[in-house]
Length: 177
Image (cartoon, rainbow, N blue to C red):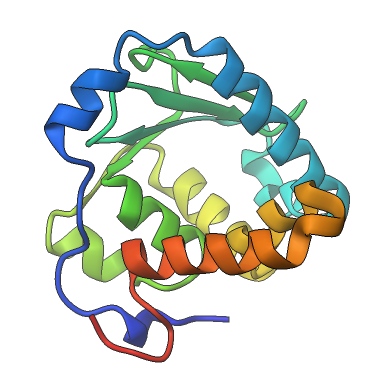
Protein backbone atom coordinates (compact mmCIF):
# COMPACT_ATOMS: atom_id res chain seq x y z
CA UNK A 1 0.00 0.00 0.00
CA UNK A 2 1.48 3.32 -1.01
CA UNK A 3 0.92 6.55 0.85
CA UNK A 4 3.42 8.55 -1.17
CA UNK A 5 0.91 11.34 -1.76
CA UNK A 6 0.56 11.79 2.01
CA UNK A 7 3.99 13.35 2.38
CA UNK A 8 4.87 16.65 0.80
CA UNK A 9 7.97 18.67 1.43
CA UNK A 10 11.12 17.62 3.24
CA UNK A 11 10.81 15.44 6.30
CA UNK A 12 12.45 16.40 9.59
CA UNK A 13 15.88 15.15 10.57
CA UNK A 14 17.23 14.15 13.96
CA UNK A 15 18.69 17.30 15.57
CA UNK A 16 22.53 17.20 15.46
CA UNK A 17 22.73 17.77 19.23
CA UNK A 18 20.63 14.62 19.81
CA UNK A 19 22.77 12.62 17.38
CA UNK A 20 25.87 13.83 19.23
CA UNK A 21 24.33 12.86 22.58
CA UNK A 22 23.56 9.29 21.48
CA UNK A 23 26.93 8.75 19.76
CA UNK A 24 28.69 7.31 22.86
CA UNK A 25 25.88 4.83 23.60
CA UNK A 26 26.75 1.15 23.00
CA UNK A 27 25.35 -0.34 19.79
CA UNK A 28 24.95 -3.93 20.97
CA UNK A 29 21.60 -3.42 22.79
CA UNK A 30 20.19 -1.66 19.70
CA UNK A 31 21.45 -4.50 17.52
CA UNK A 32 19.76 -7.10 19.75
CA UNK A 33 16.42 -5.27 19.65
CA UNK A 34 16.51 -4.60 15.90
CA UNK A 35 17.67 -8.15 15.09
CA UNK A 36 14.76 -9.56 17.08
CA UNK A 37 12.40 -7.14 15.38
CA UNK A 38 13.69 -8.21 11.94
CA UNK A 39 13.30 -11.90 12.82
CA UNK A 40 9.69 -11.28 13.90
CA UNK A 41 8.92 -9.45 10.65
CA UNK A 42 10.44 -12.32 8.66
CA UNK A 43 8.39 -14.86 10.64
CA UNK A 44 5.19 -13.00 9.71
CA UNK A 45 6.36 -12.42 6.11
CA UNK A 46 8.22 -15.64 5.28
CA UNK A 47 8.67 -14.93 1.56
CA UNK A 48 9.95 -11.37 1.97
CA UNK A 49 13.63 -12.15 1.38
CA UNK A 50 12.88 -14.72 -1.33
CA UNK A 51 11.65 -11.80 -3.42
CA UNK A 52 15.25 -10.62 -3.72
CA UNK A 53 15.78 -13.38 -6.30
CA UNK A 54 19.34 -13.40 -7.63
CA UNK A 55 20.26 -10.66 -5.13
CA UNK A 56 19.49 -12.83 -2.09
CA UNK A 57 23.19 -12.95 -1.15
CA UNK A 58 23.68 -9.19 -1.41
CA UNK A 59 24.92 -7.20 1.58
CA UNK A 60 23.20 -3.84 2.00
CA UNK A 61 24.49 -0.87 3.96
CA UNK A 62 21.82 1.51 5.22
CA UNK A 63 23.02 4.83 6.61
CA UNK A 64 20.59 7.21 8.30
CA UNK A 65 22.53 10.41 7.58
CA UNK A 66 21.25 12.06 10.74
CA UNK A 67 22.32 9.29 13.16
CA UNK A 68 25.78 8.27 14.40
CA UNK A 69 25.40 4.64 13.30
CA UNK A 70 24.39 2.56 10.30
CA UNK A 71 23.04 -0.88 9.49
CA UNK A 72 24.35 -3.80 7.48
CA UNK A 73 21.54 -6.06 6.27
CA UNK A 74 22.12 -9.51 4.84
CA UNK A 75 19.33 -11.71 3.50
CA UNK A 76 21.02 -15.11 3.45
CA UNK A 77 21.12 -15.93 6.25
CA UNK A 78 19.00 -13.05 7.59
CA UNK A 79 21.15 -10.79 9.71
CA UNK A 80 21.23 -7.16 10.80
CA UNK A 81 24.32 -5.50 12.22
CA UNK A 82 24.48 -2.04 13.79
CA UNK A 83 27.83 -0.38 13.07
CA UNK A 84 29.45 3.02 13.56
CA UNK A 85 30.65 3.16 9.95
CA UNK A 86 29.65 1.07 6.95
CA UNK A 87 32.32 -1.40 5.81
CA UNK A 88 33.76 -1.22 2.31
CA UNK A 89 32.75 -4.73 1.16
CA UNK A 90 29.04 -4.07 0.60
CA UNK A 91 27.09 -4.75 -2.57
CA UNK A 92 25.00 -1.61 -2.17
CA UNK A 93 24.66 1.43 0.09
CA UNK A 94 21.53 3.45 0.76
CA UNK A 95 21.62 6.74 2.64
CA UNK A 96 18.86 9.15 3.67
CA UNK A 97 17.49 10.73 6.81
CA UNK A 98 15.86 8.37 9.31
CA UNK A 99 12.44 9.84 8.53
CA UNK A 100 12.89 9.28 4.79
CA UNK A 101 14.10 5.70 5.34
CA UNK A 102 11.09 4.91 7.55
CA UNK A 103 8.72 6.53 5.05
CA UNK A 104 10.27 4.46 2.24
CA UNK A 105 9.83 1.20 4.17
CA UNK A 106 6.13 1.92 4.68
CA UNK A 107 5.57 3.15 1.14
CA UNK A 108 4.81 6.72 2.25
CA UNK A 109 7.51 8.22 0.03
CA UNK A 110 8.48 7.62 -3.57
CA UNK A 111 12.08 6.44 -3.76
CA UNK A 112 12.56 7.85 -7.25
CA UNK A 113 11.42 11.30 -6.14
CA UNK A 114 13.76 11.17 -3.13
CA UNK A 115 16.66 10.09 -5.30
CA UNK A 116 16.11 12.84 -7.88
CA UNK A 117 15.77 15.45 -5.12
CA UNK A 118 19.08 14.16 -3.67
CA UNK A 119 17.47 13.19 -0.36
CA UNK A 120 18.27 9.53 -1.05
CA UNK A 121 21.68 8.25 -2.04
CA UNK A 122 22.28 4.89 -3.68
CA UNK A 123 25.72 3.48 -4.43
CA UNK A 124 26.76 0.11 -5.77
CA UNK A 125 24.43 -2.52 -7.21
CA UNK A 126 21.30 -0.52 -8.07
CA UNK A 127 19.52 -3.69 -9.25
CA UNK A 128 19.97 -5.21 -5.80
CA UNK A 129 18.55 -2.05 -4.18
CA UNK A 130 15.55 -2.17 -6.54
CA UNK A 131 15.00 -5.84 -5.66
CA UNK A 132 15.10 -4.93 -1.95
CA UNK A 133 12.72 -2.02 -2.49
CA UNK A 134 10.29 -4.24 -4.42
CA UNK A 135 10.44 -6.94 -1.73
CA UNK A 136 9.66 -4.39 0.98
CA UNK A 137 6.90 -2.78 -1.10
CA UNK A 138 5.31 -6.18 -1.78
CA UNK A 139 5.29 -6.98 1.94
CA UNK A 140 3.28 -3.82 2.73
CA UNK A 141 4.99 -3.36 6.08
CA UNK A 142 3.33 -1.37 8.84
CA UNK A 143 6.16 -0.63 11.27
CA UNK A 144 3.84 0.69 13.99
CA UNK A 145 1.82 -2.50 13.82
CA UNK A 146 4.95 -4.66 13.79
CA UNK A 147 6.32 -2.84 16.84
CA UNK A 148 3.00 -3.06 18.67
CA UNK A 149 3.02 -6.85 18.33
CA UNK A 150 6.10 -6.88 20.58
CA UNK A 151 4.03 -5.49 23.47
CA UNK A 152 1.47 -8.29 23.85
CA UNK A 153 -1.64 -7.11 25.73
CA UNK A 154 -0.36 -3.52 25.65
CA UNK A 155 -0.18 -3.69 21.86
CA UNK A 156 -3.22 -1.44 21.30
CA UNK A 157 -1.94 1.55 23.26
CA UNK A 158 1.60 0.91 22.00
CA UNK A 159 0.37 0.92 18.39
CA UNK A 160 -1.42 4.25 18.86
CA UNK A 161 1.75 5.74 20.38
CA UNK A 162 3.92 4.43 17.55
CA UNK A 163 1.45 5.64 14.91
CA UNK A 164 1.40 9.10 16.49
CA UNK A 165 5.22 9.25 16.56
CA UNK A 166 5.48 7.91 13.00
CA UNK A 167 2.91 10.35 11.67
CA UNK A 168 4.67 13.28 13.37
CA UNK A 169 7.95 12.18 11.81
CA UNK A 170 6.85 11.05 8.34
CA UNK A 171 3.49 12.74 7.82
CA UNK A 172 0.03 11.40 8.50
CA UNK A 173 -1.61 9.37 5.70
CA UNK A 174 -4.70 11.55 5.89
CA UNK A 175 -3.09 14.94 6.22
CA UNK A 176 -0.44 16.52 4.01
CA UNK A 177 2.59 17.82 5.86
